[in-house]
Image (cartoon, rainbow, N blue to C red; front, side, top):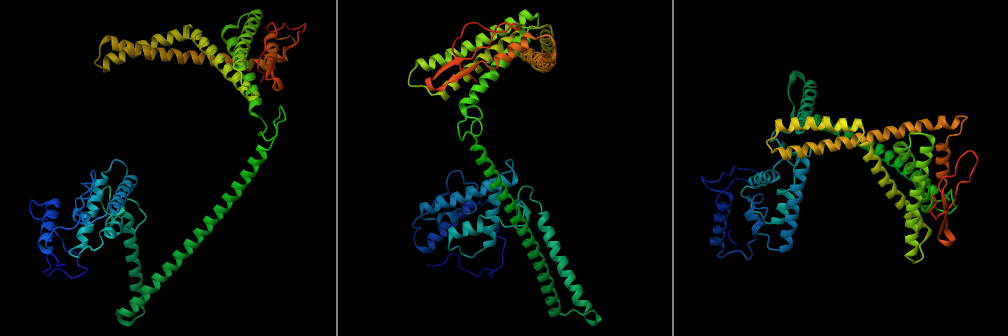
Length: 461
């Protein structure tokens, strides 16, 4: 096949600057080159591949090289490499840089460095020479000694260059001091420079070996720690349940965990109810405890009864889970009622009015909107502030109640609420063999009244 434009050109190794003609773009240059190829070869190439959509800007400098990719699988592979390079540039320089421009400029430089040497292997040239980043330093933003994001000289490469110059200067000084009259012997200089490079290489090898030993030591320590953690986890998983004795449950099976959680939820519901409605007399407090315990037990019993009525032989784990979910829902409803009560306390109302006034003033000054929109936004912010204040009031009441509980237990006089709360925490126990649930009722004593009435079924925790 005859060669296009086979006149005298630069020698191999020279990198002439190939400026385009005035008003000529890469696409027009590629078209003119294609016409010359057709005129010299006697016809069009067998396949002339088009640049894939979305990558026209990136692959514009190498459109002629891309046209030589005659296989669809090859074009897909090179397209994948191009997109991977775009992702690498974005990852190294940040999403704010123009990765397509950076890769386009890289392809222009590679094509200019190729000069008039024909590209006989377009896939190998694109994947092996044109697309990859070339850098002497470990900085991922460096390409051909320049920063891809700022287009400035790479500082790390400059440091490497200065280190090389310093090494050559040191070798030159050693070579000239050994000779009389300060003469420069080329062979002595080269021998001294080679010795310096070998010394630097030996030091670098020692550093790499030391780094490898440290890395192996760290990996060995990590492996030992992983083995220790695995053994500890295996031992923990092999523990039997501390409540029912079921083996291999990591100390607590799912059924007992749900039962214990129900117990905690009942106690928490009693605390919330007492903190909200039971801070009056002892009789009021006991009445709140009874009603709260009855409501929680009723919700749990109803959920369990519905599950058992559905049939299918419900497992004890399913019964315990249903009880826990019902207790969580009931506690959530109780907390919402408590927050609704605290939201209309004087402090919460004062916070609502203050935030409403501030937001109305701020929105009217800074936003050009209608009065209805401004009023709606201000009321939403004020409602949020009131709800946050209600949360704070409830949590403050709960902290006060729980902090005073140990002192009340030490008191010589019996605390009806403390005794009732202690009895509530031991209310529910399941009977796994029959999938039935029986509630363990607190015993009636002369010092404290009985909490609740009747003996309904429930789920223990």
